Image 1 (cartoon, rainbow, N blue to C red):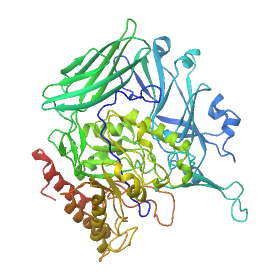
Image 2: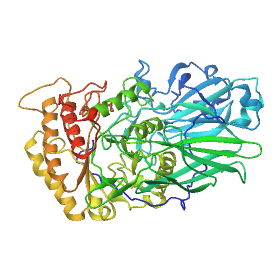
Image 3: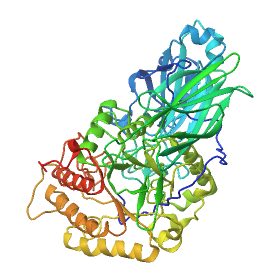
Image 4: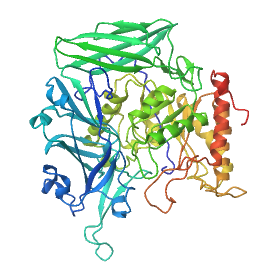
Length: 634
């Protein structure tokens, strides 16, 4: 983490979304199969080639997309989804900056081609950071920014010559500039007595490795020509009656007949409607509760939206969790009950795959989160895969959903161009994740130098979930904090400040909380704290980088948390869940070692300290079934 960093999160509970205008065209519903929709995964091995030319532009100058990639020069096999950096033994590819090219030929099912009433859409779950897509040599879309999906309809292209396979070419560029999210700079080294010709480096202002490539699944999916384009839900309840306000958008026809059916987990209809917007009332509602806060966490209904015209029918089913979120001066409320965040910060990061979607890793992480007794995490420092949020919905894990606004430190990153891109990214994030019951806050940025700008971001974010605004401590104290509902603080006492002096933690942490709350009377989350520990390194008395020091630091923080959580502290998120890779630097030994688990997901001693604490907190604040009670072995 950046030295001496603090953060402030803005949380606005917005009561209605139905006057909101989304500036981007169309919805971004997650592709789901139904009686009217099919999905074809294109994951696996793709042909791959990095453009190593001095200007990284040979692929465009010679139009590699117009023919098979293997005909333009040597290619290698590259797995999708995965970061390309750690796949080979080539250090130049590990640290490559510039354009890389992916290609795959696929056969589209004949019925998709022959049926003119079927739309075929190509969807990329995410690629870092700028992407251009061609189908059979014709450009179909481009997208700026990583971590979020983009797509294009390709129906007409694949029908021009149905006897040929569909050749998909994707060029991806990981270069970061002062106007990208996250930002960065390219620095050319022109001293030929020290550097070779054309030598440059990518400077970044964040503490994780700049993994690149196609990180999430690539899909082909179908819809009818008249189709459900978007669904927006907002939930509430009164006594035992749940309220689901919804709005359905249909594309392809001026009018369509709709049937909206809300079903419980057993498939029984609990409410229905025939209008494109309205309120569904659910008698004897089962609320969506966080993990360890209720004996039946993560309860999801299914909203089936069925539209039909005289020619086309489309069916889409959306999981719906009925719950509310509110904030008082001292509490964060879920379903009008106090919720205490005892959770983690995470990274999408693992050996070999980098940031590539890995189902085995996702399931392992969720098992560790639940073993730990954690009930929440922040998607530091970018949006995580949709599949991960769906797991959170099902398991009741609460999420602070963060955009890639990390490392915004240069004044040139606060101009109109940067702001416009930031707003587009936030709209894409909200458009994608607006219906997840697990998402309780949006995070606009992490630790930016916000004293350089004004609070402008929240104007366009009028959506169903609370909005989170993060800013720098100086700005927050002077301008930002009066407008926020929750103050979130990142601090590293006895690590980046007064390293080695554990005795200062009680004084400095207590003063931090008292200063913030005394001035603004807002509830506080300790959104980051921690210390590096090399697994297996021991020393007593504790010294920095040993497991004993990490334990002692955590316990000192916890003692203060216990004093303040009965007053106005509403959460604690450890930095970090697991060790993760960073750029090579003299202060990092093969990555950041602040994890309570190793990068291979093995526990350090701190994991058991945290597990004991989190289960104790869960038993004090939740309503748990007998089999999840505080384990006697702890």
